[in-house]
Image (tube, rainbow, N blue to C red; front, side):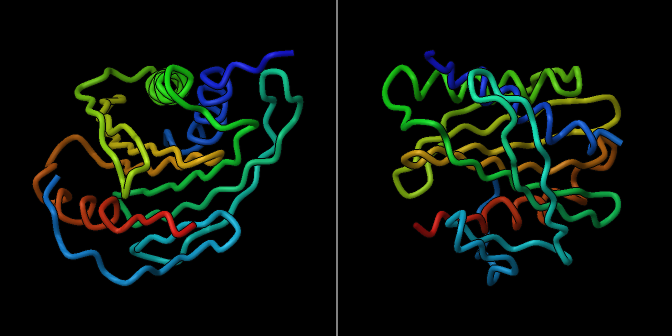
Length: 178
């Protein structure tokens, strides 16, 4: 059975972000969280909670997804690493990133405000900003080999100027280490 990577991406995002519904360049601070298993590091403004969730994935049955989150009111940050069932390239890579983007907006009935193609040391990705109720969500998504990484910042829509630097600091600190 052929697995649609865009369905996998959308399912993953919807299932992990739903509980959280309640680029200025700066020098990145030292990482406060390093995952050797998932091959990434990131600075987070607090002690991250590691969580796991078993989610149904198209064509794969139940799959255990590990992710971390930090909430420092009124901001929340989530990192969702995932080992993919294959290595998306070319058109399938774009389909996968499209699926992540759809999952990101569908998970909270959000309105897409902006999107752009980005990369991190050669790993292709996307950055999108959506409005979900009274919150803004900024997400960066990257794919390297058979791994995907989703980094999400959730903040109040009101008073964005005072949160911009901290959000950029966290998002800009993310590194793929393997």
